[in-house]
Image (cartoon, rainbow, N blue to C red; front, side, top):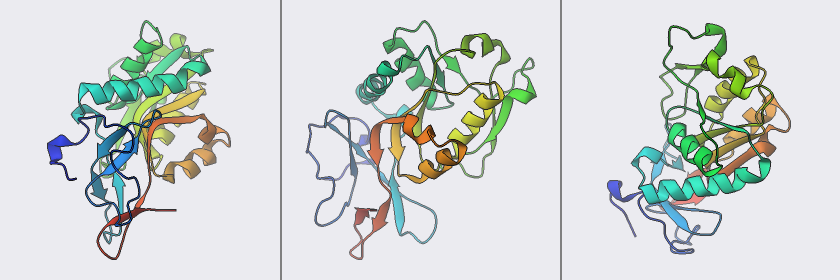
Amino acid sequence: MSLAPHEFWQDIHPPATFPEDPPGGIRHLYPARLPDGRQIALPIRILPGDGSRAVASLIVNQASFAVEDALADAMTQALRPLRADVVIGVPTLGLPLANAVARRLGHARMVALGTSRKFWYDEGLSEPMSSITSPDQVKRLYLDPRMLPLLRDRRVAVVDDVISSGASMRAVLSLLSKAGIAPVALVFAMLQTQRWHGVLESLGATLPDRVHGALRSPLLLRRDDGGWTPAA
């Protein structure tokens, strides 16, 4: 089964609708699995280089509301036992998910990080940030100093859409560290490959244990016949 570009991220399929590692290799889509076994079809994106590696892609603001709700439900389910007092959202695509998760937890609000500097911001509460999808665009991540009373001495959870290389989350954690904040959980719509693991571990041995994801997707390696297979 193949999908047109606008058809990805639109439907939640019953468990085992798509084989996750078919004998002929993955061809047209990667079926990411929600915790309850249902599947979401993700497009395959070839990584820069020699064309031998690829990843499954998730762009939340192109997803249907049903898919966004399912992701937020799964993220909330993972976070609820940790009794977070405050949810922090990471721009850009982490913000709607943070909003949805905070509402499901019964919070009155969430705290949004930003990439636009307001005149009252403190440059000391900022950090350069880049991502795998926009490697040539280095932005600056800010924490509004007026939000500090909401975060200090609280159980804080960070919500974002995808963690892949770990570069963006390293910037987030560095920024929060400047404010004396150590999150109890890092919650994502998708854990994309395992490349992020070593980056977080270098920042703190227990950090990878605080990571939760609604979906997981592996690094994909090109087969001789042109298909893709998950890396070991």
